[in-house]
Length: 429
Image (cartoon, rainbow, N blue to C red; front, side):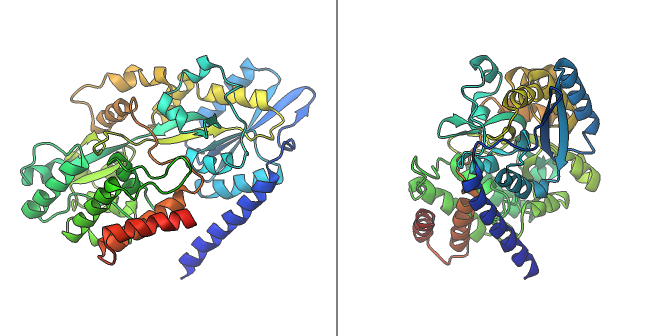
């Protein structure tokens, strides 16, 4: 009960803060960016990058300041869990920093309230062309650019070669359709599950993303529900069938992605859909499982779409240093600096040239699994995109869809009723 109260309290707080922001996103200059003796100060917020990357950013900032005399960067690192509430408070109070590291999902909530500087008329087509086109689109809302892409993370499939061999499977599945087929074979031959995909509303969006990969349009151009379609019915039926046939662990209704990792490390599942960074976690916690693990591209559906998680940089509209802030944001995200950060942080760059570096493209066939994962992830970036729509209430959409999908999985509602209820609830919210 205490945990539930905390969640609702936090949601209530965000609601109150967002209401403040609606009335507070005015062109009043921020009090954080100051000019003293001709020196411009740019305040830069990142999300939980200290102390691991302190040296990287200190060197980056020193280089920028050397190349731009008269501009000083004040770097503030904010804990991941605190960023949303802190930036909402700062924007509403007119004390926002000049450059902020966010993800497009949350940034879009404030973009819809005119909180960020519009970039299309401030950035040249040459500068914009440095970034992967699909990734640039992730920081646009109503065809207006509100953010600059920074680093990326792409999911892939980590699989247990021993379990596949025991089940008589020679290759990992490439699609959800193939996954359903091998799930039965793995369960029959080994007694283990093929995979774990949570439908807990507050956790991973993997299942919601899978619907898009299966050809489902979540919302239309007016933001209304667009998923009550034959494609939506097929996607709901897919997940309901797997659960009702005993091919998904019962905990998918109550536990999140952390449980997926635990089950894979225990050798209880054959596949883990996650980011390559978890290979180190598996190697530390379950070296025997790591020894028999390999990687493959992420699962997809009939569309062939691959998902990517994006981190971006946004500039509050009321900054009093827009030119210096934009210059610094472009510096942080240029080819050279993105490549350096990608190597330091085991992430992917969002610029075309950095992604073509031999660090991503020239990997030996007998290289370590984590190196193979880097190559697989990088190859996906040419066609990868953010699959969820850039709408301010995307988490609410996920909750509505998951609640009704759970009802279908538990046979409390038919697929048709669940889809109709979900669509009505979204449109009437």
